[in-house]
Image (cartoon, rainbow, N blue to C red):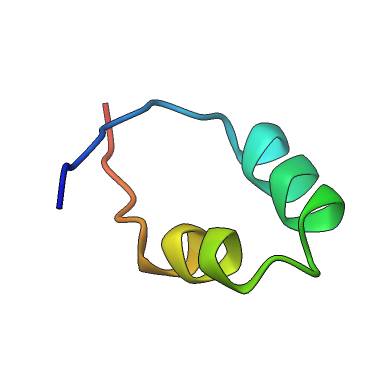
Length: 38
């Protein structure tokens, strides 16, 4: 499986979770995302 890395702000993450709350694969990916500090 391909892996993709993206940088998102906290606001972006919240928006994605709000918009895609009914999409289990996206929610799983967002929950598995690792927070990386600058």
